[in-house]
View (cartoon, rainbow over the protein chains, first blue to last red):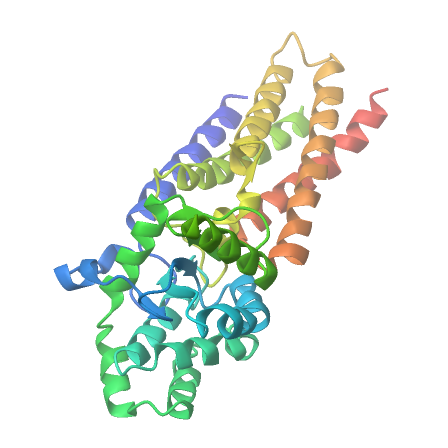
Length: 221
Length: 139
């Protein structure tokens, strides 16, 4: 019996050591784990990529992960309608913030978006990443070359893009964005903030249409 | 006696897994070691919390109960008693059903697999496979 208790203590001790070691290790995600990223003042100052008029009365901040299936579904099904009916008409401004959840390629896809954004092609890359999500997200191979093909397809200068990806130039931005989202209470993606308030409930294009209608009506009174 | 020892050992392993996931959820551990799995995605999804309590904490409590009952059942005065065996069988059925629910969420709702959750599911399944037949035999 004493030997049995010894085995229990041994298992508990091994687990404790593994947990302690694990807590000091980095993320499995390729492309800069958060524990190894240096954050600059410029990283902290970056407020995300925006789409729509600066004078739009309503702003939505979306925290998203390019590998998250719900984000892909939202981007491919709901967002085109929102863009057409609300953003292009000057009623809504959309702000994209990275919130990498810990999928295998969450961070490296966030970097791909940032590196395309450096050349003014963030929204084209966002659309391409989400549209082709099922192609690159399901693979266990690093999708960096697939991202390069997408970047080429949207007309990005590949030499600059490659240099940006290789240096992980915007890893700090991604980490800052993630930390800010976490501080605001983001736990999953996509999470939306409408004029600073976290959105609960339905997040389809009709819901955004109704919200913008009600917020702009309030503004007129 | 062997049966209760085996369950105690498995419950301890399950307890350590649940504790690790709970430590991550409450911020004691910054990152989960998950290989190419989707542990952080699963843990940070809306299904990572049930009734305001992290799902992993239910695992911590459940496995701790099983461990305590199994060890209590190993005491010389309790070895011939039936209650530890029936209690372990009851606890394991509850745990197994909860595990089934969580695995279904991973497979059919989140479309993502957390390796630690799979580990816990395997442990719970083995405990159930041992405890339930023993519970039935003891009646």
